[in-house]
Amino acid sequence: MGTRENEIYDIVGIGFGPSNLSLAIALEEHESNSSEQPITAAFFERQAAFGWHRNMLLPQATMQISFLKDLATFRNPLSRYSFVSYLHDSNRLVQFVNNQDFFPTRQEFHQYLEWAEAGFRDRVSYNSEVTEVRLAAESAADEQILEVLVRDTVAGTTRVVKARNITVSTGLVPRMPDGMERDERVWHSSEFLAKYGQMKPEELKSVAVVGAGQSAAEITKYLHDMLPQAQVSAILPSYGYSVADDTPFANQVFDPTAVDHYYFGTEKTRDAFWRYHKNTNYSVVDDDVIRELFRRSYEEEVAGAQRLRFLNLTRVKEVKRSGNDTRVVLHSLLDGETEQEMDVDALVFATGYATMDATSLLGELDGFCLRDEEGRHRVERDYRVVTTGGLSCGIYLQGGTEHTHGLTSSLLSNIAVRSGEIADSIVERRGVGEKV
Image 1 (tube, rainbow, N blue to C red):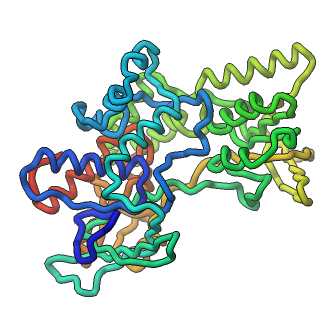
Image 2: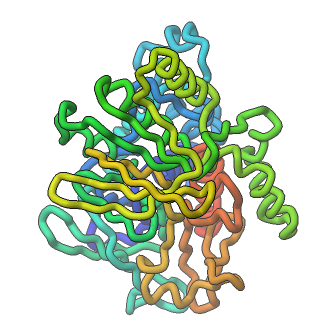
């Protein structure tokens, strides 16, 4: 994408994953529904091409949300960017219906995202890392302008793009336990398929997966499938896997209206959301995956050839490396004392992600941003950071708002409505046209 040097964009998106892609769709649909001046937008993504959790696109792994919770349907059921439109365009709608499943594979959903992204190539620049956002020196009191510094990761050059608002969607950051470092034998789940693809299967005679969530269980199952001669160990801090609650009443916590209940609720209300419904998404596993892993373990026990092991109530205390040898020191949580060591050829930490934090990216602008008593950004209902009167430009967050907007802050479940609300806010603040 070529940005015009002197143009001032209404919104510049930092990151171009599903969230800002959904926002781009909402803004385009506003433009098609309004005869007024369109909202101008440009997006910058540091990756070389569009991709969403590519290293976890495991065979047969399915989405944990309905296909109707796509980029647009909950906001606009007539959108041409819906998953149903994608199926129709791909000549697979009839076959998908005959499959009688609300949950497509991750592979297919990723294909849908790529299909939608193809319509926005003129608005997104890849290999483009935003390194800083600052207030332009020529900003007037009645119209402040932001300068977004964008580094071309291939050429190494930097350019300045001007904007009235920004939306930050840089994604989650892979989280490793304290003291654990990644290398060619120690991986985080976010890099799993890439790292696994660099290995020779015959070299992997003993592998271990750390974690008790969906990714950990899926990787354990995948390694057990792909390495029929290997010892596969699942290291669990809990007493086995816990099932994800996807029952109808529990799923209501992901409804668009639940965001209002959380945002405008009392502290007791918010605490109840997390206390009672955290098991809908965090450190839980789909029922069918749990049953399949247990079935395999049981059948191996009957056959007397146990190669799938579950080390419950166990944590990794230390990883010792010597050449290609990796020794894992395990600490038992059962008695708090027992330790054991095991040698592995690969160790995968499926230990989740840290919440997006825009502080370092905002630089001096962060001084205009107000925070709550716990030091977190205060955020308006429209996902705009609360700022002092010294800054009129909008800073919107797509992620990092769990403390204000609840469980769906960075999830796909509410992506269509969330992006529509941000688009509406931009439109209304600009004073252009009708709601998206």
